[in-house]
Length: 237
Image (cartoon, helix red, strand yellow):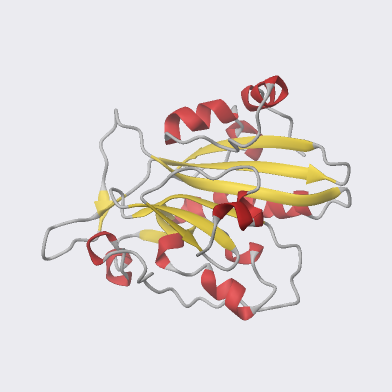
């Protein structure tokens, strides 16, 4: 049995979910209701010996059939199979990269969002992780649904007409630990659409993300300093 307390990724906390899946190199919380991950948690891997992107998208058969996304759900939908844990963050081995292509790690993203600001943020996080004084970079991200807005969906299930809801937005929260043990936190909220805005404009307090996503982030960190850190909006790195 894979205990959360034994996983490096969960050192600073792990939100609840319908089904928590412990992959070799990241942890994911799956939502049966939304037929996609509620959150995905990773430590950015700094090693990249040139492993090629595997592109072997496939269903995750650990998810019960009634709630599982399939390749056909995305076919001709106009939406990308958007990575939560980025493929480029996990490229030390072929297996490590292949693991990020499980459909449990995918969410319906607008094409120009996936290849635009979301990709830019992924690259910026890797740049942060490459800084000499950064020891480890923890990242958790997931979909956001605004319940005062209509929800569209992709895919259908012939048996019960279940589809995959398209998120209105996505969050990403970053916790960086430097070589002195100091923790720094940033959180971002991005609408699921094309944008030309700079990454700085998407920064929000972590407490704001918690309210919208309905989860607690980095809950093993406690105290007044952490409360203050969660409530602030830091400048970009």
